[in-house]
Image (cartoon, rainbow, N blue to C red; front, side, top):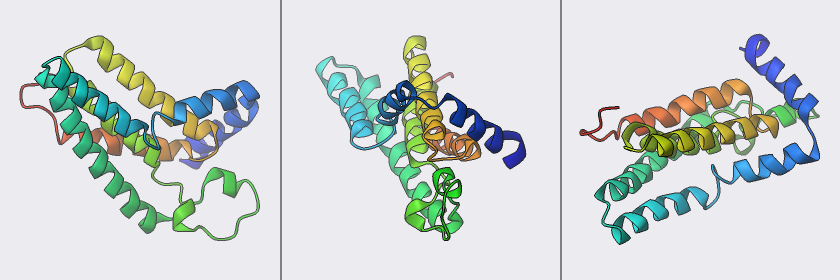
Length: 174
C-alpha cells in the first residue's frame, strides 16, 4: 500500500502545499471534526421538525447512531493499531502514542458515516452528491494536512460507509 498509494499521495501533498491549500484544509477539516457533525445532525433534526419532514428527522437519528458507532470503532482500532502519522513519520518521532495514531481517521469516518446516511437514504440526488463531495473533501484534507496516509482515509471512508449502511432505511431503494 505504501508504494502504490501512500508514498505518491504524500509526495503530491508536499508539492501542492501552499497558503491557499492550508486555508482550504482548515475549512474542509471542519466538516469532519469538532462540533460541526453535531451541528449537521441538529440541522436535520430541527429542520425536520420545523418543516414536518419525517425523513429528515430519520436522517438525523441515523446520523447520530452511525457517527457514534464510527467513533467507537475509531477509538478501538487506534488503540490496537497505533500507526504513526505522516507528519510524525516525516520528522523526528520515536514512538507512536495512541493519541497520535494515524489509523483510522476519525474525521474521515465521521464525515462518511454522516454522508453515508444521506447517500444511502436521501431522496434528493443533489443532497446525496453534496454529502459525498463534502466527505471526500474531509478525506482529502486529512492527507493534505499530513495527518493521515491515503490508505488511512480510504479504509476510514469504508468504515464510515459501513456504519451508515447498517442503519439504512428499509424503504430506501438506493
